Amino acid sequence: MRSGGKLVTGKSEDIRRINRSLILKTIMEKKSISRSELEVQTSLALPTVMRIVSILIDEGLVIEVGKGDSSGGRKPVMLKINSDSMFFIGVSVQRVMHVVLADMSGNIVSSYGCNTVSNINPDLILAQILEGIETVVLQSGIMPSRIKCAGIGIPGTKFSHIKDSGFPFDVWADFDISIWQKSDKFPYNTEFQNVARLGALGEWMFGAALNCRNFIYIFADYGVGAGVVIDGKLFTGSCGVACEFGHTTVGLDGRECYCGNRGCLEMYCSTSAIIRRYLVDDSGHAELKSKLLESPNFSIFADAAYGGDRIALGYIEESARILGIGLAGLINLFNPSLVIIGGELAENCAGYTKIVTDVAKQKVFRNDASVLKIIPSSLKDEASVRGAVALAMAQVFDHVLPD
Image (cartoon, rainbow, N blue to C red; front, side):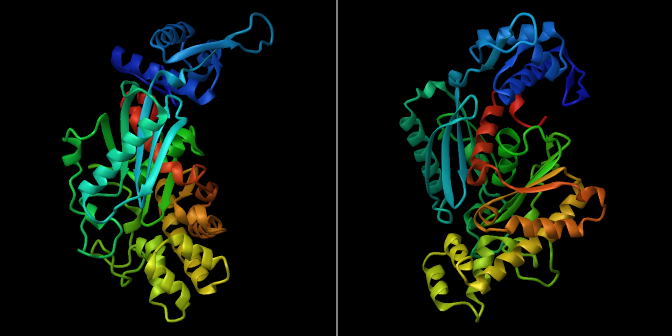
């Protein structure tokens, strides 16, 4: 059989699993599709499609939903995912914690949000996660037995750093996530992943990167990270910690980073770095500085920047130019067909993505590589939590993640 245009060979059990996943993914993407159209879309033989669809219907995962249009002859019976067949939890731990309960089609049934106690104690964050999960389940009225798995997006853990550096999630630096993985605290089978990679999965499964085999998702927020999909596979590296884009060096003698190096991209392009730079600028407005010292909320900063504070706007635009330079390096390395810019900077700063795009395309080495789309996230602040849902679904179905 063929998957994503490539011939798949191997054990019959593996091939059956891949075929099943391919059919489920295709039905989910098309929303409503006939068996004959599944044959065309998947390049599987019709008897194989018929057999797998019959099994999926018996399992309650797929349902028949009436007749479709016909260009002649009998009208085809249409198929769709049975959205209510099972449910999944998604959690994104950022400065605001976002918890959702989603159905089999990825539709959000119930959601919950709160400010994360980010830099106090992992046990307190764990308590917030568990409270959020309990809340979305109670709000939904769904029986817990119908909820299969949970996916949780977290900032990076076990990284080199300088103590008390001011990084919003300094508490994670020494934390070993396996402590949570081995505990019995979670009510469902649970998988963890970096929030930037989950942003890529969210866009791949539910957003602008649907069916895209080579793309990059950039997370530009309190930190800077990337999720890279190459030839239909999420790139994680040899030990699962690839694409720490925020720690690309852009200035050899630049600002000291919490990782211990100097000139890291994140020290110029993250929302927290932009605010810190404004606070030490003698030209900055005292009123805005006072507000930021009381509450270092980037939305306050962005409102001021686009409300007439040219100094604040200058820092935002400079961060976009520097991010564009860094992004050009990624484009030169990976040659994606699509780049998606997510996080608070792309979402709340008008023209930010355009500046990043213009600079990146100017800096790309090969002309062919510059023929790509660079767009803001279609899922906005839901990208990572939707990716967490995809991560949860992947524990049951292979079809929801890049191959």
